[in-house]
Length: 532
Image: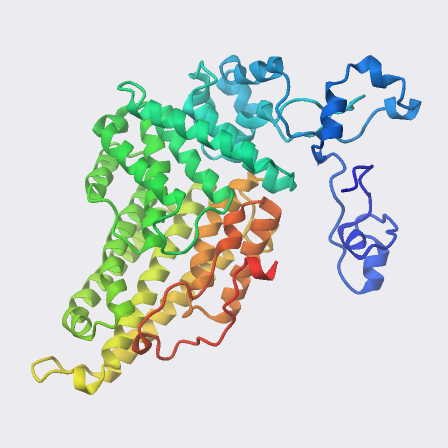
């Protein structure tokens, strides 16, 4: 039975060591004497979750008059921390929570700080968790500023977007606060949400609405929250199924989505998610990508130059990656030697085009912000992966067995190949180092925080998972950078509660032996989960 008494005021390290803390501020002296830095104290106003048992359910259903006499005078005192029990409450409470989106204006919802910091309560907080679903989503996705306006338009509690938000919030609360959950109840919520989304997609009017496509997008974020992606190159997980649904909805929405108040912003969210998925799966971007990026350029905002460049870069990089990837995996020596020069020319042209634009760009277009920060990292991920694969392609050409070299094939200069490999390694190391330098202070890095609110900083953790995973799983990256990425992923999983950070595994893809010559393969093959 977990301890449900008053939370300890001791610092984190003293509680872990089970010793008495002297409660010194800003750090306790017992930690100093122990020879380590004091990690600090918990927020005494944090939400405290209690396990739901048959006893607590019976007690919750009892009228206040039945158990008020059994409570001591001290029990009626003011409580300094809110207590939330995750279970379905009365129908009246559910109805109240369901109408919350339509009852609040965008300004009221976006301006609210639903950090669940409690007021002084005389009794336990018996609000159902659904009351906080929409405010939590708006706060966690603070950079996505149009969310509150989208929710204001919804009138029914059975809207797919509202149901998907409830599902995401349930996973968020459970993973962040380690609250026990009933798997059958979670499965029921998931089934109802998927059914609602499926019915909306079949509807002629709702199928292409902003709420429907955002509901599918949030379902994808739900899969990341619970750690639903099984492998780096798997296309069988629910997350990838949602990506396919998003692609179909983008196609169905057509060109009109670029000219609606929120359609363009929604496209950015969805399309960048699709590009991230293609990069992870070593696949080419959708064939409509060039047309879509062209429409974005036709309606571009003044500060979107860097974002559009990254979109074009990833489209071309993914096309090259899906060509090189099977060659180095299967050891296709003939194809490697036949297409090497053509691929080298395309990779070099892509690199020069990007660097030339950056050299000519105005300083404000590349200035650090929560917006440019995300695009910098996804560009670094694509750059790292492309040059890592080209390093292995050059290896494959350089170490082709003599019996596989025909008389008519070109003779390659080994010094030129080694020089190309060196340039690839330098670019990989630079991209990895820049990614590590972008880790915010709250996750053990040195980069400034772009969002200081507790829940808004969750978005930074989510946006860091893919770039850090590429650094950690790429074996041409220096080991110390890989280890730093592993520790940052561990922090994201523990402190942000995003379980996908625990699912990153190096060595998930096997390459031809000749392609990995010179790459260290004797480091740990453990996943992030195994070191927790």
